[in-house]
Image (tube, rainbow, N blue to C red; front, side, top):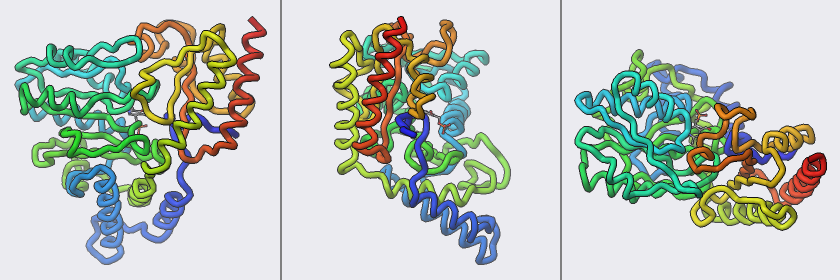
Length: 374
Ligand code: PLP
């Protein structure tokens, strides 16, 4: 198999997997139990919290673990609304993940006003538009750090400055799920109030994620119960997965990997662009994550290409969901004013140059076959 769909999910790293297996077997004590075997689990969580905190340059006590970034994003939106009940306005972008857009849709049904920042034809947002949309009753601005479909890196630090200069009380959240392992993620530099992350996008197991919370004292929980995670997210901790996400955080390599990934990504792009005239790279080629390319190839339906590659054991995804009707087209491409069905290729540190060569060979052949059928 050739796996080039790492923005969908990544393979768990062997070293994180051994932690997961070992802790599952050896340390199944409940972290809330007061005998030493329970305390051992508590210590494991403490260590993982430190490892995640180090990755984000945050204090440990400002990190909580959740089940996913979907939960984290929902939790942040909920906590922000509860913290500012008198305010009714939220700003986000039109290209966020559904785990931000959908809860905001729900809030709309309850009388909240949601403003979506537009993007240009390469998916960039405009900070002047952001400034213009800020209101007295704006309670939250949520802008992702890296887009999952096109890889664009958004100017979160500058956006925070724009927002806080006008009103430092407005909360700022970033969904950093796709940034980890690709760019530096430093919460102090970014200046955000909340940041969401998810393990399975950086070689940790699925079902574990978390939130950086700048001001935990003002965070209203979305799940109540046994007061785990400083009382901010109840539920018996998933100790093996938490330990594994901590280990995965330690394994993030920003020294060599970004360049290696962008070299491989650029090779793929060049091969397609050279062979198939008229191919369009979708996104901001001057400011995007090192591992992602999104390609619109003439006379090739991205969904057909994804399916054909899948039959050959090659995994990529379509820039637009698997349907020909408008309802299921990618909301990101629609926001960019792009019509068509692209493919998204996303790499990770578990892809080798050898893989990439084989991938390019099969990709070019498959595109040719599809074009010939037309
Ligand atoms: N945010 C972004 C940008 C994503 O790409 C994803 C997953 O694809 C999520 C949030 C949701 O993450 P999880 O799968 O952990 O719920």
